[in-house]
Every structure is written in C-alpha cells, then in structure tokens.
Length: 59
Image 1: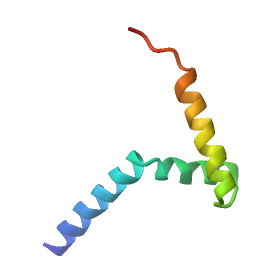
Image 2: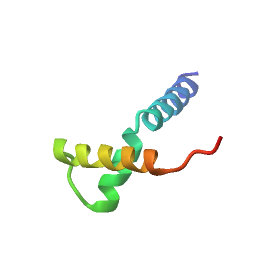
Image 3: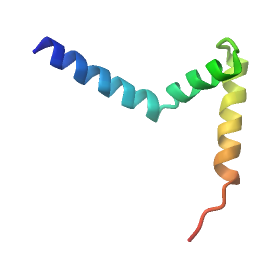
Image 4: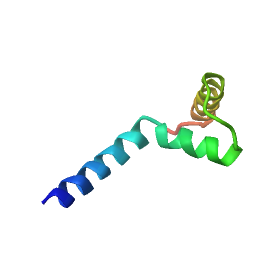
C-alpha cells in the first residue's frame, strides 16, 4: 500500500513539474551545461516566451 502511494505521489509530482516548467528548466540546464542561477532562469524564461509567441496560430 505504501509503495502504491509513493508511486502515485511520484507521478503527481512529475506532472506538476512539467506543468510549472521546472522539468524543462532542468533539461535546459543539463543541455547547456550551466548552473542554476536567477540570470539563467531569466534567460530560459525569455527564450520560452519568445518561442511561444513567435509561432503563428491558426484560426
């Protein structure tokens, strides 16, 4: 029963990390080989917003 609750909690935490972009930020740091910092997060967030609003939306 405890294993089931832990597995469920792990899944929920993973979903929340994806929704909040925490996982994307961790992947960004790993792929660029940079340490976590306020400046790096700002750079990451600006890049994500720029990409989001540059994509054309259809009807």
